[in-house]
Length: 147
Image (tube, rainbow, N blue to C red; front, side, top):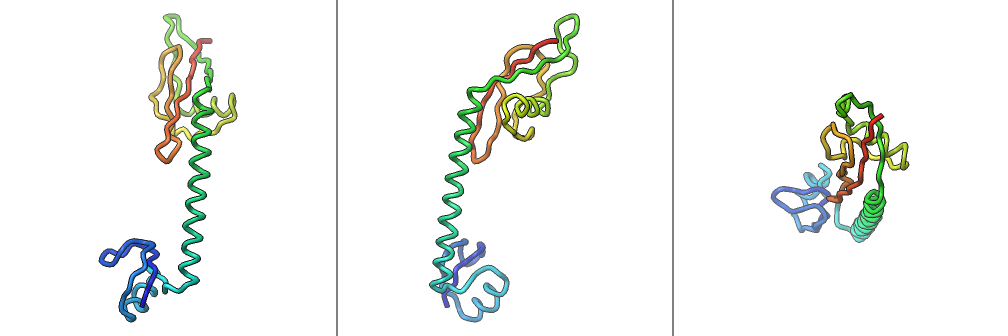
């Protein structure tokens, strides 16, 4: 019998492949355990449609991430912090503060976990890198001013 593998099966093949297997193995193990479906015309067409939809969604997501990357490259956000007598910051600027400032000032919501920087303890301009997903990285500028 022919089966369409839904999940990777170690000794048989990877998900999405159509394989010829013995009837008992196909019915009693692969289909019963949810590793495969019987490779009928309808099942194959449905699988192709799902793969096309996944590919389209991925293309759409990548386009949105590239657009966000371009938008972030033009952004400069500003954070004001108290400064001591010698010109150094009290504490520092954390990822959480940067994420909140980005949302408040520019309306762009990023998770603080996606930001790649240490706590900033100096005044001036800093470049902040953000992981957007799918190996896309964006860089924006942060200006730390003293109060």
